[in-house]
Length: 144
Image 1 (cartoon, helix red, strand yellow):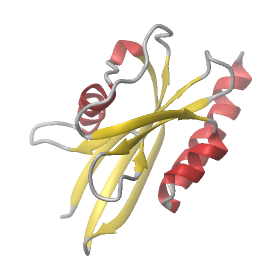
Image 2 (tube, rainbow, N blue to C red):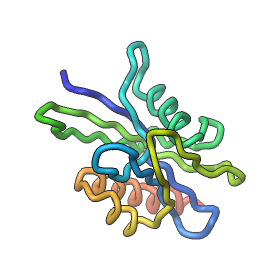
Image 3 (cartoon, rainbow, N blue to C red):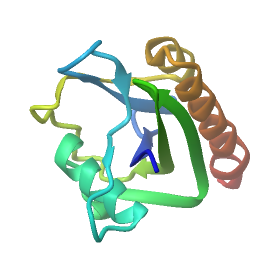
Image 4 (cartoon, rainbow, N blue to C red):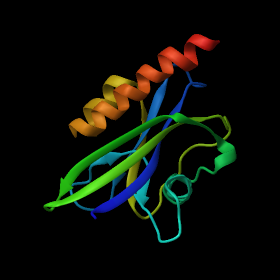
């Protein structure tokens, strides 16, 4: 079995349009991604997503509204080995808090969907962001 990672695609809408959090890694190609990380022994996928989000961005569960039904799963090869990444959609509801950087990242940005997709680069991540945006439009914004 290959590696497995989990995280949250975090959005906010209290500062104007819907914006997505992307964090720039401080290693490798310095790619931009939502907070995520590998599943530790004894953890389930959601526990991993929450732990990694707290470690990497500083958000705890009470800062977020998680949409468990809006789950994105992607699989791709890293150095010839399969990797599965699962993201859940989460809204930042703590209006007094912003992301903070861990040693794993060197920058973060809140971006509208088009800019987020352009910065994300990888097609799998772009697909997950677009699916999340579609979910928000159809299920979150329309329920106001």
